[in-house]
Amino acid sequence: LTAAAAATTTTTTETEAELRQKERKRVREIRKNGVTRHIILVRHGQYDETHREDEKRILTPLGRQQAHKTGQRIAEMIRGYRLPTTTTTTTDTEESSSPSSSSVRIKILRVSNMTRAKETADLIAQHLPSGVERSDPDPLLNERRPCHTIPSGGMVSPSTVAKVDEGHRACEEAFQKYFARAEYYEHEYE
Image 1 (spheres, one colour):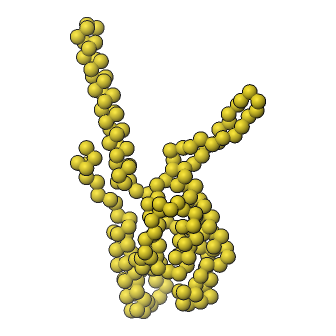
Image 2: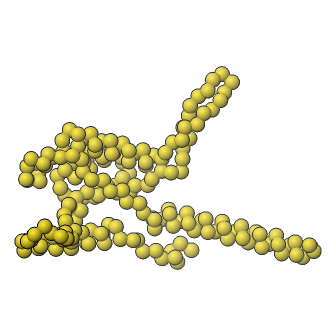
């Protein structure tokens, strides 16, 4: 290799390294600014099904336990997984935990306006850090049938058809509001 060729090779390598570093920075910015989002769906805990009125359909003791355990697990996810490590010293061996970068950033807790869902969310929220925002209950998130079942099992009343059609519209609206892919504009991250 001549000195000029070696200088060109070094410059090219540095440029490639700079490009890789620039790409890593761009990806970090995208993640930091929320283009990627993770949605954790939680169904309400077990509830009393003996009543028809929603306000009487509260969680059972098992349902409350399920909600607490879910809150604890989500809190663990927010803190991040801790990998056990063993450190050897001259006197003994001690267990420690090393933090991991696998923590989950949760910004907001959303809930339907059904009694059992609000109760579940209240119990889960007891375990979450104070920085997690609580939204007002949203009826778009209520349980409903999103589409007609085929075969229907026989004749279906017009009121059932209307109810399912309305459920479909609400499901689609909820999907667009909460689940549809976020828009990504490259120029915002350059």
